[in-house]
Image (cartoon, rainbow, N blue to C red; front, side, top):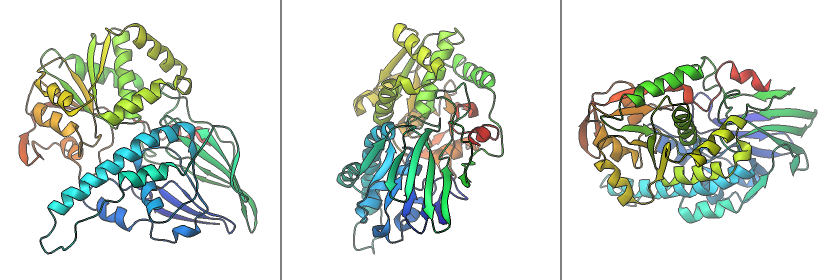
Length: 416
């Protein structure tokens, strides 16, 4: 059996592993490289092997760094099945179409700013129609239900506790030397106490591949994270706004429930929260439609939110005009917006208007890759470039690490 790591090894993004058993040939994940100037070129050169020889694809979860090159895989010639959990398939319908739209816009921008000597406009990694066609290749499966993507492979999805629908891949594969049990953790969630149940514990494996994003450190305790949120938000809203760059799927929902919990316990006053991201809105609605997948405390919290809408006034902005109107609010607003690394989307507008104001606060709640605007803010930049303008950074910057959807050193032992 041969494993080839085509991304996600020695780096955070682009997760993709080619598995060759001697009997079957398949991919586990097909993620996009993100962050930094080299990501575009890496995505263009990815998947440089004979795609026609692939038997199937297994997907651990919907995050773009694990799923984002699926439409390109299909557009380059792969026509086989893509197996994922049912909820991952729902999220992909939102995420891949949004990603395709961004790819088209990125190619359009690069074409306008290309070297004058270049004869042809740049083409996107994939288009919206190609992403939509790729969705037809999805084969949804339930948790804890064995299926056979190939005569020589059986697979079961177990809950990974990372985001809604995330899965640990538990496989029995036929090799020339006999059947072997192969387990891919995908991205793992934190232990008990989070938005989702703790990852399923796996008893044994012949080969175990485990994510290690935070494998060398421990997350802050939940109480410490709550204290940081109270200090950052409670001291700001009377004078200014709180802007939270957030990944649309997983992190936005975790932030929302964390805020609701603080409002419910009285540690924060009633909150006015705006989710300014069409994709985050859709992901939040999908999450709240699948309460059976959340941990029991989160189900109770969601029920409290529905009973007490005045304690957390949740608003979604549906169009550009609604989004622009938020920049007229001078105080009292919590604005959650994508992208999580501040490099694209509506968050850049909110940073442009709120970063120069000392009475405002920006909360960084997720990993910021090198070369991103978010990373420059975390590294202490006093001026940043947004839409070709130099923007002074006067707002208070808070890095909230305890909301990570990834396992830390101790949590990683949960599956083994």
